Length: 262
Image (tube, rainbow, N blue to C red; front, side, top):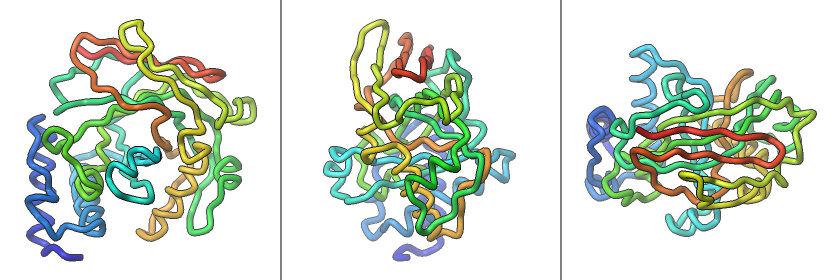
C-alpha cells in the first residue's frame, strides 16, 4: 500500500459523507496522487465494514468495467468489483427517491443467485453455471460519489465500484433459462428505447464475469457463498436518470424489471 492508514481512513470518510449527504467530492486520485488499486480496495472494505457494524449484511457482489469501451476509457485491462448489501436491494417497480443519489445512472444486467459456493482461484464459466440456482432480469443503479463522474480506476474501486442499488425481477431456474450469452435486452425510459445489448457484451458471457469475480476475490480470502447475488456487468450503456422517469428493462427469455424515480 502507498497510503498511510490515516490517509485511507480520511478517503473512506470523504466517500461515506458524500454518500450520506448526496454531495459528491473531488476525485480521490487528485487528492491522493499516490492512491493505488490495493489502497482503493482497502478503502472500499473499510466502508463496507462500517456498514456491517451499522447493521447491514453483505448479500453478494457486483462486477464493473466488463465492457471493452469502459476499460479503454479508464486505461485498464480487467474489470473491478464492489459489494452488494441488503440495504441496497429494492423491489421490482418500486419508486426510488432520486435525491438520495449524487448523479445516478442505470444499467440492465442478468443477476445470478448461487446455490453452491464459488472459491477461486481456478473457477471457470462452467463452474459458475453449475453453482447457479437461478437468474433474474435486473437493473443496477450506479452512482459516483466523485464529482461529475470524473473517475479513474482507483476512484471507482474505492467508491464500491460506483454501486448504489439493485432491482431484481422474477427469478428463472437456470436449467430452464435461455443461453445467457444470447439473451438480448432493450432499455426503455419513459416508453422510449434508449439502448439495446446482449449477454455477449459481458466478457463474452455473463458467467465468465462471475468466474472472474470468484477468482479475484480469492486474493482477499473471500468466496462467493450460497444465496449470494452477483451482478456480472452492464449489457448496454448506462444512461443518467432523473426524477419523474420510469425505467424498464425488457429481456428476451427472462422477462422485465422496472423502477420509477421520484
